[in-house]
Image 1 (cartoon, rainbow, N blue to C red):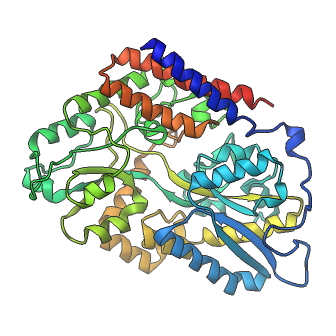
Image 2 (cartoon, rainbow, N blue to C red):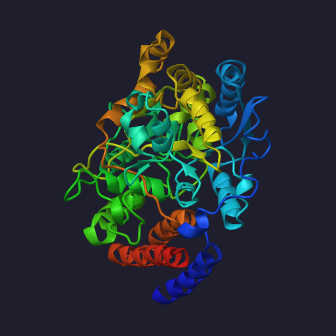
Image 3 (cartoon, rainbow, N blue to C red):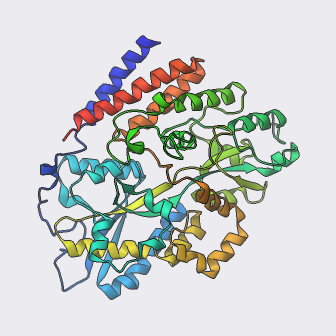
Length: 472
């Protein structure tokens, strides 16, 4: 086993070297971009005779994409027209696609190609922080002190706060809950959905092997990855906080993550032990894709996914079975309830024109307004992060009509603010390595202690390689 992983780690090391260069030194990152006030795809920022055009990169697709187009159109026709600001939005594909494009621009020092606003998730935040062109929310508030940031929900806002700096505004924001086929549970005599891994095993013993169509029934399906590991390890109370962490510096929030801490603190072993029990009992299938189709077809009982999928779930199921919703399952009975905030943030760039950056801030404020947030929530299932949305009658009616949506909000209120997602430089490799090594542990029936040791070595090697290659 050790020899096999030694070879595998060499491959990872070569990959990390190829990905080097994402961060630059302070002196490099503050160099003025060529064509400083010329905006990609828009007017010159200094043009006072026409509307100031800001370019926005986003990853909103499907129902959220339709809404995003509407938000841009409404802004351009209303508030934007009044302020002489026009938005040009560009769909860049997935968040990882956007992060890759951002990284390429920064590596090639093509700063004039940066947008004014970029929507990024955890895969892109490190590159944004190190870009040297970040126009943070703190910067925007310094120029706009009348804006009341307290109207934005604390947990989604803090998801984009690193080292005390508010880098972006949450848009969109969600968390992970457990949806379930309540009809199947009722037929099996299960009155309440499980809340722990052990209770999922117990429910598996009561559920039939096949559904009404004679198709094999899968109880639960998942391959843990970086976000899910942050959730399950984060549920375990820490020594000095209500949450435990995967990597040091509070999951990379208070400084660059340089090593795992879950291996030393025993939380990784706790999680892997309980997860393997589920797998050995046949209560969880080692699958990383296809769960949604299985759930829609009545072949999967428990389905953990984002609250943002609520509308899609209700529409696709279309009454074929009753959709239940409960809190994200806990590792064990001693763990806290909760899951980290997911979604993305809207972040701004300042490429040498303060007024251009302030114009970008006006659009972000619009996106975070009560009305826009309520429309986004009702059209998708994402949270309305502006507390003012709760006062809108149509939003109140929505919550009454779809009680499943309130489950995510209730869980958010019970989730410790100490629980945060993982931010590491080699985000993609880190994610895939966790999946690969947990799969190997299960399929090769590895000893838990050996699995912890192997996973620790692989992930620490990724962090060391990345940080060494991107040292300032």
